[in-house]
Amino acid sequence: MHLYESNENQWGSPIAEEKQQTLISALESGEVIFLPHLSFLLQEDEKQLLSPACLKAGSKNISYSPLTHEIKGSFDHKINLLQTMMNRFASQSQHLIHNLFPHYQSTLQWGRTSYRPAEILGRETSYRKDDTRLHVDAFPSSPTQGNRILRVFSNINPFEKPRVWHLGEPFKQVAEQFLPTIKSPFPLSRNILQLLGITKSYRTLYDHYMLQIHDMMKANLDYQRNVKKRRVDFPANSTWIVMTDHVSHAALSGQYLLEQTFNLPVLGMLDESKSPLRTLEKLLNKPLI
Image (cartoon, rainbow, N blue to C red; front, top):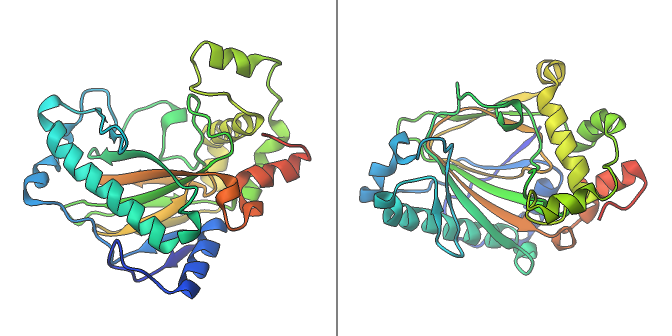
């Protein structure tokens, strides 16, 4: 539930090795790296994208691939402008991670970029998709197979409104709460899910347990009400970095957010014992990959 506040204000500025070690230790221990002075600045013509009208009906965000430049969730006449803005955010986020965490550079994998121009408060959705409830990230169709989910967020709200989060208890406590009631998957069920195309890749035992923890956290309203949590207001023009598979979090309100996802193999960590994979394996006393 902790924030590590750092004063970086440039996306590509090198920092001292001692500071790098402090930052990577904080990140892998489940802290949020908060950069209150680091802003992502829009070009003048990109300011027209500050509208929920950019979203196609039924989409909660606009998704971009830095590798293929594919845009999903918006309209054709906005694509070029969105590609320019989101590609720049993806590139600057990569520079930021490489500078703050050079240990990750050789194994870090680029994921998708997301732009969220809609207000999250009041959005109607199923409980599994309700990100206003505390959760750790896990995805039914996209198994991570143990890889870490590292994300860079920037609040680009033009009206000075914060992105409001709750931060919950440490991952080990979350796991200890929910693991005892999780059943093992049925034999061959995970092979069938991949064969039918329901999952994009094989759902490992790790993915099974993480998805169950995610769903059970969100479904348990007593837990949501009573668990110890901290409210954090991330102001406009600030940036933060977090491993969302590790940190219990909820986005309560806010509009106009950019998010860059990176995937990091557990073996690429400085201390893999702090990963959810190793934590679950220790608690369950068995390998999950």
